[in-house]
Length: 265
Image (cartoon, rainbow, N blue to C red; front, side, top):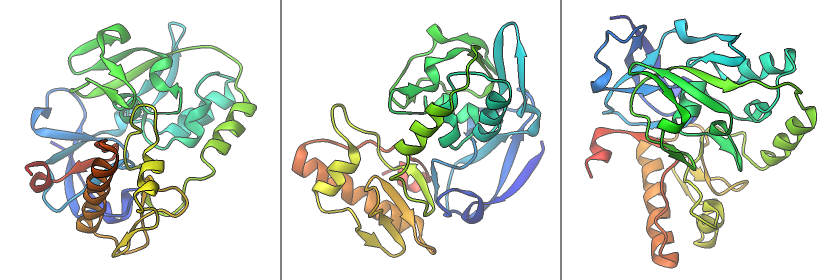
C-alpha cells in the first residue's frame, strides 16, 4: 500500500492538524472501510487523534469528454475543471471557479453556491461499488448518502461558458474572508442563515486564541496564525449552545471534524 506524508498545519485550508501518513487509494483492492476518504483538505478540521485517512492517487486526476458526457476523475481540482470548461466553452459549472475542492469531495457533500449545486448536473458516479445513477443516490442541501469512494463523476455536457455567471459567483463570495478557514462552518438551517444566527447571539468576531468567527462573515471560522483544534471546537460548541438556547435551532456542522475523542462525546 502506497502512502503519503501530509502536514495538515500547512496543507489544510484552515492550517490546523498534525503531520500524518495518509493511504493512497489506487484501486479498490484496498480495504477502505476503516478509512476516512479525504479530498483536498478544504472543509475538514483534523485533531490529534483522527481516524485512519486515505486519499485518491493522481490516477484519478483527469478530465475527458466521452459518450456526450463530461467525465472527471474524482481527484481533479475544481480550478482545473473550471479552466477546462472555459477553454472548451462548456456551460453550467462556472460556480466551480469560486468553490475550492476536488470533484469527488464536492459530489460527496453536494457542494454549491446557493441554488447552484453540483447534483444539478450529475448523471452518475463510478465507485468501488460500481456505477451509481443519480436517481440511486439520496441527496439534498450539502448532503448525500454516499459512503464509499467516488472514483469518477459524469456530468451533463452542454456548451456556452458564461463570464457573466463567473462574475456573479465572484460577487456572491465577495464577503468571504481570505484568512485561512475551512469554508462555511455550519450548514444554513431551513429558512435562515447560520451567519445571521451566530451574529445574533453575539459571536461575530468572538475569538479564542487565534481562532475567530470572522468579522467579515460570521459563519467562517478563521485562523489568524497559530489556531488550535481545541480553540476551534470551543467556538463551534459555544455557537451551537447559544443558538440552541436563543432560537431552538441546533446548528449542524458543514466542516467535517476528524477527531476520535470529539466524535465519541
